[in-house]
Length: 245
Image (cartoon, rainbow, N blue to C red; front, top):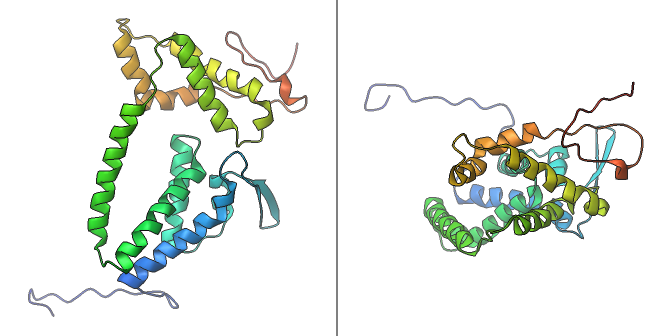
């Protein structure tokens, strides 16, 4: 019994469970994350390679980080956090699933000597990582490109769409799907107008996370089997039916 007259808690572990803590466990966590990142490192970029994953008799060929990580049977708890990061990136942004995993692994790579050799406490490292993140966001605000005309805005959006689609299966059809995506987004922006018609209010509404989440629901994708991918088109005004009358 302790000084307060209560019995200490007893933790029951499943047979075969390994318990580890301290610096060796921190190093083990970093090494596990590095191993996961090395698995998808070669899929990054326009010249990234496809991975062939066989799971449960099912064969998948992809260079998408989130897809590959979901198919891998990762048992290490720390390495599973990278899978969660990739899923969150895919759900919120829809792109950059590989980049966010590699960025997290690279940060851990440079933090490893600080823990292993310099004996710095993880809380101290996290403190300065947060400061570096804040400074990075401030730098991004200073170098950000802010289009002043509708033509410049469309040009920047087209470049962003082309970059995101460059690693997808439809990369060879950027000339068709790039403008299609931009037209769909700009069409929503033109139709969503605030009640008072204030442009500044509109800009704040467009930058709102709730508005971006709603935009994903407003833009519908109707898949029709057969035909050619080049037959895809953007329907701005009208109704689409799955069969003709």
